[in-house]
Length: 448
Ligand code: AMP
Ligand code: MG
Image 1 (cartoon, rainbow, N blue to C red):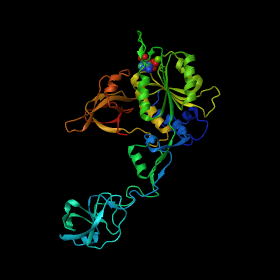
Image 2 (image 1 turned 30 degrees about the horizontal axis):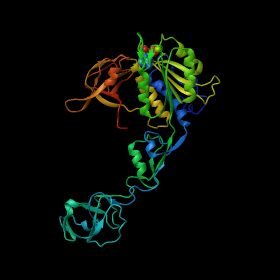
Image 3 (image 1 turned 180 degrees about the vertical axis):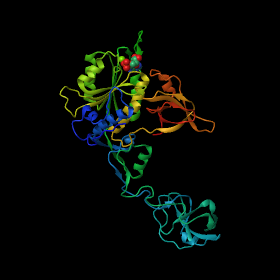
Image 4 (image 1 turned 90 degrees about the vertical axis):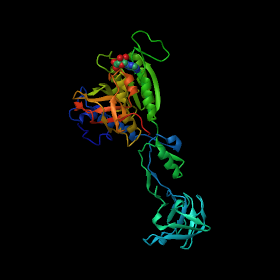
């Protein structure tokens, strides 16, 4: 794979496709490797990310958003040493003997969660303490109540049932005052909302939402609610794209179906570009298409027409579109012209667009994670292109996960995509997979 040689490219202006691709060795839009396409897109996405404004939101509204500024812990969490179990708190110095012996301590009182810190007690006493309650100042150990025999105002326990400093949580052991609690670039998950709440922070700084417009192109496309004349198909891409964007959490602008008409296409592109950071189209970019979409893209933008060495999803357009002919450099949208076939549109979205959007939103974790899973079957593949096969994750006899392809893999067959819960990613040079081999998969769903 070639790399962008000039690492300062992203900050130097103007950022044109020619500038970027001329810094690459062997750039060939007619046969582009997946990794190389990603590399080009990354350069442009980085620039958008560097210009995003910041907004302060209540933490619940920040779920799924990208943290814009490091969060520094304003307190210690927990704020005091406290009991990790219900039991009796005492000073571990009385456990000094290695031999088995019965310890007997007088109960000085009870401490509940939320009570203030208690101070002194003598060595042969203890406090009954509840989980989360602050440890008395000269106590460092809690013996759980199940190991204790209570007799009137005393407890007895075997010294071997507890070690010094057992069952005590330390002040600041989760988050320490003055330390970084969350780093900018993190996508905020439920655990992060909890963490911010534990720091007493009602609001957090996140990058603004990215605005993404999309439309479908094609004279044969009918919208839901319309009848379906012979030779036509219902527009499904606007629904898959909507779903994939919704999960990312961007502002979605659906511009409908645009027929293969240059004037209408131009209007749609101008509208999309004046209102959004990113434009996604589907259809109209394959060889043999009535060339309207491509010629309008060319007229309004700085775009390259790629034939990506991948399957499904070979034809694709990438570049910038301006809302006006002046092409004022700052005022553009990034364009992803995806192929029309329903599975190709999803695969190219997952491979190129999703990562780019996360990067543009300021995420430092934008690259999709692949995991290795055993293949239940053998299959062949042509070298010289990256292939994405739809598969389901099942269990083998030992309850270990393994993948099985979900049937017909044509780029128009959405049912095998719907049945699948992952894409198997077969690298450019691979020629076959044997049953039992580990293969990288991109899982569609997760807990995130
Ligand atoms: P195209 O890339 O425009 O040549 O389209 C390739 C194939 O995908 C054709 O069979 C189209 O009818 C189909 N197609 C294009 N756009 C859509 C869409 N939005 N929904 C469903 N099928 C589509
Ligand atoms: Mg078409």
